[in-house]
Image 1 (tube, one colour):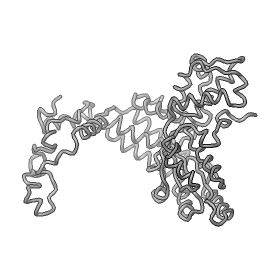
Image 2 (cartoon, one colour):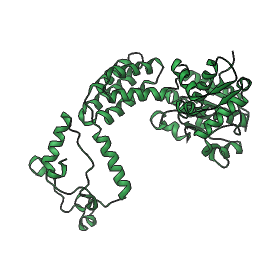
Image 3 (cartoon, one colour):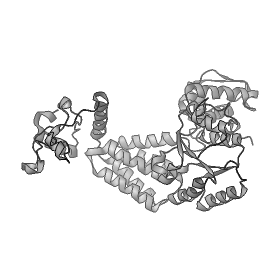
Length: 424
């Protein structure tokens, strides 16, 4: 059985590598290290199908150093220690350190990551980690501090077109089938900047063709994908499409659809922490002040999942999913902070009004810092009007209530305190 097209076309050298020129182009940071023959440990962060694994393999081949691979999905602490022991025994004096490539390093537990620290610190191995998740959240600080972080970008249209052309003209199987790329919009749209997904879709269309030569059109691609909706998702590459559907179902108050997409992620082997983190974000972004308990429940589900894992973790995730989907919605806080950030970027660093400045020294007190500040707790209802915004922004409105039952109370309190300023 032939290898998948994406595997057959995997580049062997940097000259064949498509995209990421900010890292591997002439004079770029990674290219310089590779050309010098010595690399330090680093983590590659980027979406699926942009060349993280390929880049690690090219580096190992170029440096002619042993290359060990571990998958965070299937490897445990024992596997890590076994690889480190092999690397230590097989290394000759003054030779470049063997490379240990860990795919999906964000799925490694704290203990698994801890087991890497000594080997990375001593240079027994050079670690290359690959992750689709923000390493700041998922990689322990001691390990992160020992690694450089390089961000990979989704492939541009020109990169994807170049890859398609290479596939139909250079691949040992496809070049014999005389394929014409008449239209490519559908291929590009459904790939989402993911080279592996792009090649999987192309291969699917070719395999479905009744005869050759073959002219590829948008209509043929769409028809093929409609007939085989899961066929191009061989390695869970619809990750971002499904989480998008999940969040939009919650936002749209459809608990049935939200549970369906949750089940799809669970069956697909999705990281439960990834799901839980998105629930916390949705609770703040989409439910917000309309039901502040949503954030508490989502956060509790996150904690529960970390403590109990699979399969029981599906239950608190489902509870939080249904609660969020059936809750009233408000994005007033989300819109408020974005409006505030836009205001700050437009107006710069405006001075803090003197009455609400901190005055820890006598000099600051003499300059009027804190002078005139009215302590709200000294007044009826723990409120008294005073200026908190900078002088030039005193009339700005950043938070606009959305009048859900819970938020209505907050709005009425603001109108009671500030009068016309908060009347819509």
